[in-house]
Amino acid sequence: MSRKPTNNECQLLQGLTSGDTVHYSYVFREYYSALCHYAESIIGEPGHAEDIVQDVFEKLWEKPNTFEDLRHLKDYLYKATRNATLNFLKGAQHRGERQAKFLSEQETSGTAEDMEIIRTEVFRVIYREISNLPEQCGKIVRMSYIEGLKNEEIAATLSISLQTVKNQKTRGMKLLRMRLSPAVITLFLLFSHQS
Image (cartoon, rainbow, N blue to C red; front, side, top):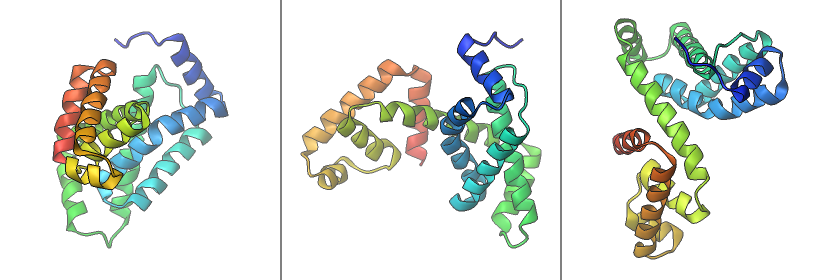
């Protein structure tokens, strides 16, 4: 049984159904980057991923659906992106064996897909929170945990001391831990080490 949507959710979902550009723009801004990342993880080409996600949002605009809650909307966006991406791969004969292998694996198991959705959602939440950190602090956290730079490289790039980098990283992670659930932080740290 799904939970009851909040008033804000109801307004957003009704706005989508009635073709309200403000609500549509909000959903686009909230999910576009994450869906591009998800599509790119399947096909490995950013340009095509962006085109695919834009098509998904065009279809949502042209033929709005009725959504029960935000979870239903999010499921729809990820499923539509996945289907559009797989259709793109099927229609592109010149793509290599890597995509063919991916397609056959996807038909037998949804685990890799589920993990990529979780990873993308974790990074979407993290990106939003990092952008709310103080400027230098956010920049250092992003360079370290998302771009994978070492403390020394960050210090050299930003022309600051190594100790400042360490202090700002500690401060940034402390602020993120206050704002996010332990599960999100744990998954973020796990995924950032895999990148």
